[in-house]
Image (cartoon, rainbow, N blue to C red):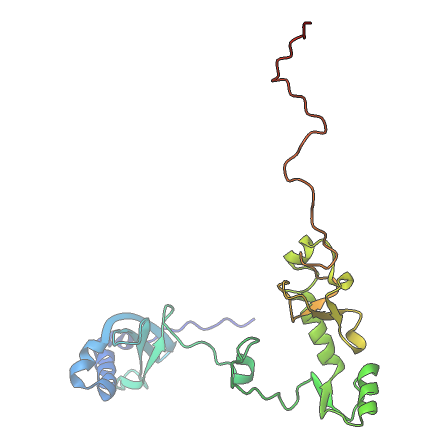
Length: 258
């Protein structure tokens, strides 16, 4: 295994703090002007060896909007008898710098719930959730309806798209694992307000049609449930426990004399 060589730049590169600062101030002046440039370059923070003949001097960036950033000035020399020259002057983020978040493409940035009134969100060209309407959708009910009507949709759900939707619905807030479902007296599959979906999903999902349910108008799993189930009966018993026999021992009974 080869040992990693230790970088040991010449001392004159390490000691050239003033030259590095002057280069940073000159670079700052190009954007901020000569008067503001001096104040934009703060204290000397560290020297970072870059190679055997190059180092980077880092200074605190004190101009507005660059909290935690640093001016990095790279100095180099071609030999012991050669002058120290400035190779590069850049602003770099420090460990506590405020930086922009990692770039995310727009089609990955949009999340469920982001779409507002008037917004348009086209599907991706290669969206795996959709297939052309002339292909079989693996759902007999969909194929039957398309034949009866004599028309078909340009795109229909693919097997992948259907599986993805069912997984999301099953694991979502209207699935059997939701807190409300675990506390419900019965499941949606036995509720009179449950409207089953058509096709291959009929046995697993439907829509809630009870306006007093928190899931009204939403797709619910047959295993979901809430307190508004159609079979819930009113409790006619007293909320206060009452004994079957009550003895009134506060009455003083006296014998009747004739």
